[in-house]
Image (tube, rainbow, N blue to C red; front, side, top):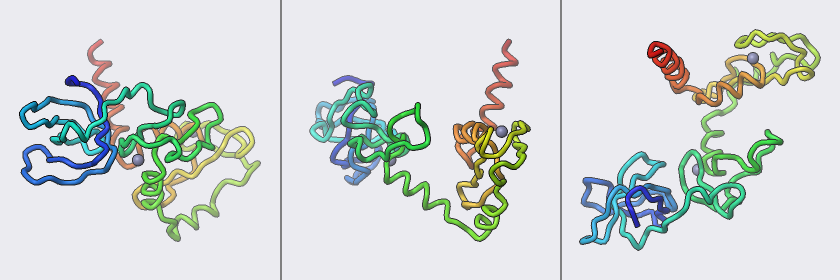
Length: 201
Ligand SMILES: [Zn+2]
Ligand SMILES: [Zn+2]
């Protein structure tokens, strides 16, 4: 047991740093050891899914090799809640033939994501405006011209907070936007990052 090692806090109980009261957090949360308190037989663990440090009894921790988790192993860490769960807790990935076998977020997190995007009347109206298969389509982001559903996949770009469709964009741009997480300002961060690094040259 060393600082920097990874552990699975299977009981989901401990003391949030600075707090006196024992409380619950999601069971099987994955965290990194910050320090040990041998006297109290506790470890301070940075719980990734909560972005918080918790003091956890050492007997409630199972030390894990995070590199031996994932689709090829019996258990996998959810990229959203960061709990270590059996691979069956992740839905098979149907979108990507050559990508990962299962979705990166667990079924429970997926449900939460879907709940945030209810179909509004605006969404239904927009759905009717979807470019028809075989029609000429210009992506408003990359400006590439294609034949919808033939030479490019056209997808609805959702505002993940309201569930409304913003517009239809090409699949490639949708994947790009997805990497920067809708609604958060990661795109601004990326632009700033590129600008700052360019200035260093
Ligand atoms: Zn999850
Ligand atoms: Zn595009």
